[in-house]
Amino acid sequence: MTMINFKSITKSLVITYCLGQLAACSKDYNFTPAPVPYVPPCDTCATVELSLKTDILPIFTSKCNSCHSSIKPILTAAAAYASLATYVNTGTPANSLLLTTFDSPGKMSSVTTTITAADKKKILDWITQGAKNN
Ligand code: HEC
Image (cartoon, protein in one colour):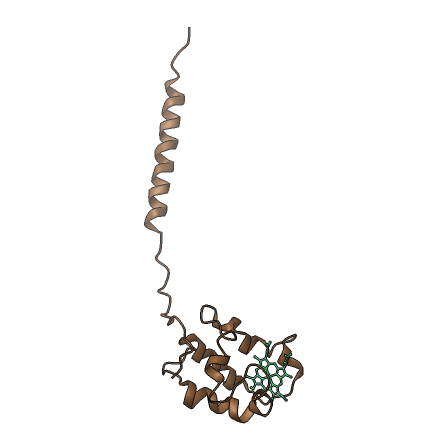
């Protein structure tokens, strides 16, 4: 005949109760992390609209067209927009051939040009804004 072991049941109940209290307790001490400072979606993006005519073409004229008035992409004022269609990637601007070609082993990486980081940033921002004929 089996005896109901009250002592053991009581012990289990007490342990369960205590664990429950502990769990409840730990909930009370669930602290809220300090608020994360607001970071704008892109803190380096240009806030003004860049213009092909006034921001980008001058770079081409002074730094590219000694060669690119006859080598593709043709970067003269009259031809640049149409010529650049396959060199810009508005979906993933940083992957645009117009920019990646300056990275090793890009075709331009072995050609001397005085393009600067600031020029590249302007070109990147212009592409990010949709590479408009503006
Ligand atoms: C000294 C001459 C020279 C200058 C200056 C120059 N390039 Fe080039 N560029 C070349 C040559 C040569 C090629 C390789 C062409 C080829 O392989 O068909 C090339 C290739 C490129 C390509 C890749 C073409 C392709 O089809 O893959 C791009 C984009 C490009 N240049 C952009 C520029 C830009 C933008 C500037 C100015 C910041 C510039 N280049 C300045 C000579 C020059």
